[in-house]
Length: 368
Image (cartoon, rainbow, N blue to C red; front, side, top):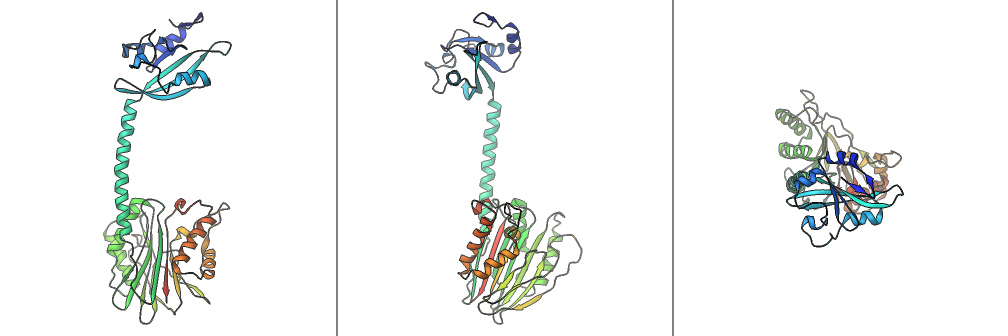
């Protein structure tokens, strides 16, 4: 029976002996003065009268002894301790008398061996998953355009996924010696499912057609053949530039933020409508529109991740603010894109561009 300073703890002892957790009480000299039945039956070496550190095979008190800290601080302390082949969570709490004086320390040891093993397996699985995501991220970035080898055409972009993988995508490519194709896309959702659709987009889009509308129609049909779920869709703005005439032919498959054409004296939004690449209807309608570009014109392409950024007043960065930044910034297209990204993140009170909550893609085409 546990007795400290003449106080009878028989009823409390019955309760403690009914616990599956191990419970022991230690005096100020590190002597074990009480063990509950669970602990006494489980480990023969842990008996009353034995030093608590000797019971676990040590010759001196543990360097991180939580019981000593509990005495000095008067507060509950926790640590992990290995006893035999098992790992325990040890909680040390001071026992006080009626005067509030600390008279002993009670330690409750809970076997967390199975939990630690599960944690190890989870960490190993997470490491494998992270490795796979890293590989997938590298593959996705490897599919992005490497540049444009045209003397009179400049092109630059910024691609910022909010997760390891992005649902945004952009590509620019030569169709033939006279034409360049360029599209920007935004897939529903984020992460792995969305990134898989960007792979579909890149491989399924017919890059030989000079009609963006026809290319989008064929893409829509290929999407439906693939039997994707109804909640999956892709918005795409696709344009073809004639390098000889500088005519830009474009068509839109539901991309809600349309490219902006501007120079020192003007700006124009390439508004166009069309259903996203989806399986919502049987026969979609896409149309080709045209605009003649001039030397000095810039065409800004973007996804809604940047205009949807909000500040603390729930105000969006918006198309209006975006146009203001485009018109007043006369720097190179690389600098302009970087400045816009920083300005939008500052507007949203983000500490860095890594804190974005949606994928952001911005790009600039320049007629030199």
